[in-house]
Length: 316
Image 1 (cartoon, rainbow, N blue to C red):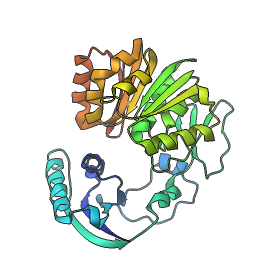
Image 2 (tube, rainbow, N blue to C red):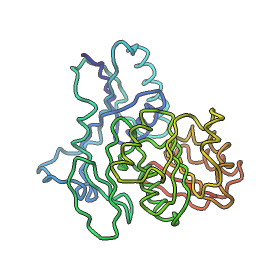
Image 3 (tube, one colour):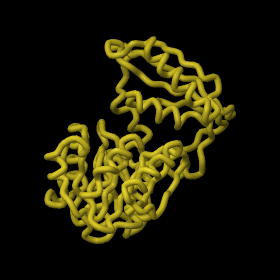
């Protein structure tokens, strides 16, 4: 099968913003090429020798994404991307800011990414490893989580997921009830249970993600009575709202700002008085809007944590 390959020639400063914007118009995955040197943190995560003589960094980057010809109007997509580039120019350097397309042969897109998913520490007490890697805990108190995200979002390596895991590591108490909205691979629910939560209710609009979450619960030997997995939209499904339950000690939502804002208006009945609402998936351009939304709905903002261009709110 042939794929249409779109390539955006841009600047490294624009990559995160373009990634966010492409996600919002329905692009489900991207590939990034740049010449940025590996940080010391990156090197610690890698289990291969660093190659000598890296290319000189010129701050250019290429963002690639792929579409099936029968599900894509190339001219319309190019116009959409050009609009995104024009919008991004107001906030950051976009470099050449051009988009081109080419044709490429089919690849194993589902599995090729596994080459880059290696064990890493997501929080002080949380280690994450893919199911296909061997790894030994560094400390006895470490909680080792095994993940195979399949086609669901959530290896734990993205900044937004790390921020949520670190918040759970800080705030969770033994026996807490946790509601995980937009659970993806189930990684946040698994982390919460590993840290001592009594029960986790995990919801995702994607039935395939709920199936993956169930598989990951089993991989991590979590007893079925410790969690509930539900599929649907908490904002639209009245029956699901009932199943989601009330009186949760922590509600965690790692989605996108444009989903978190309307979700905030309906989430409070599910949270016990004084409970914590942890939200991430928020690019810094949307931080002020989310801040205002939380205050409008009566939340007290306790902390805002940042990692690169992303932020995480802890509110009650």
